[in-house]
Image (cartoon, rainbow, N blue to C red; front, side):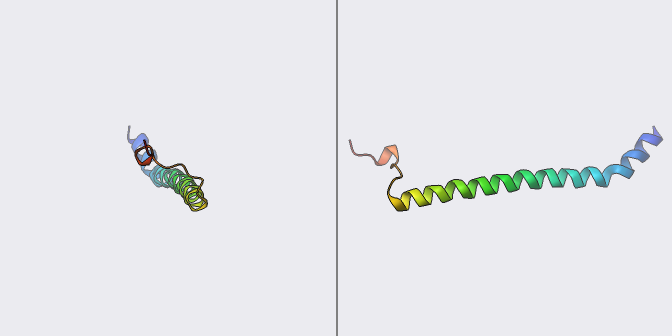
Length: 59
């Protein structure tokens, strides 16, 4: 049992580092994809090809 605790303590920094790297990759992907999505929406709205929301449509 003591050996398992010592091994865990020795590798703990690697676990934390890998967790931070994986979380950073996920957050980076979400930020980039969100910027692309909203960039396309802004471009389409500026060009006038973005359909209005359903609540803004005339009956």
